[in-house]
Length: 208
Image 1 (spheres, rainbow, N blue to C red):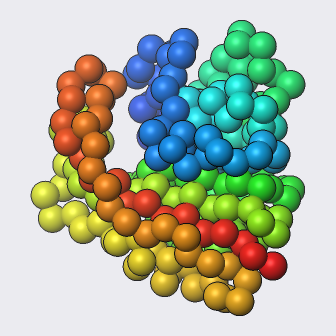
Image 2: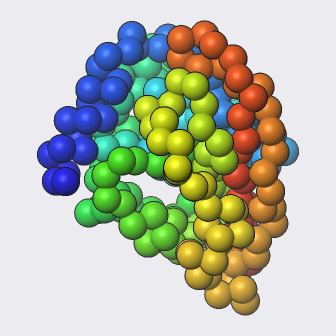
Image 3: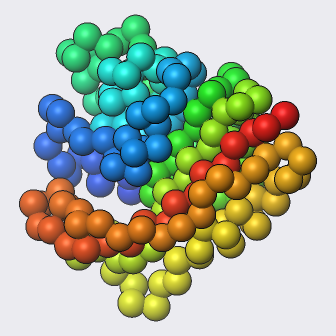
């Protein structure tokens, strides 16, 4: 499928939802980042913008990217309405074709899953290389299928965090895996339903 198909799909996903006024940040982000000093952050697949806005509220300068023009335009407007327009820059990128410029202290990729072709290992490797020394790459993937997921394939298999790390194939002399686990939590979906879900959490730190 083409980039146009992917763009139309994700624009449709976001356009079908009312724009969120106060989108929630992902819990794996807040638990990981709360004790870090603020700096430059990159949010891959920013979606509704909850992570980008939370980071900006904590003093980070955030580059937030998504393939959906609807998501990018909504986040730009939302950041301004929250008084964070000077801390959030939203950009549209098809990560299969382009990667944001810059050096970052934090790169986060929450639920960067898509029904379209995406070489995630290459994208995440680019993210790791965009880190400054001491910077962290936080990758949070689905480890189970929520009732509200767009992908309800019963045969889907979710790679473990260690498998994701192996696929990125980073030099251990330069990058260190600090966390690779599969915690569970009670999540609330866009329609208000709750369910227990599993997250696959991978945290990598650039040491040199």
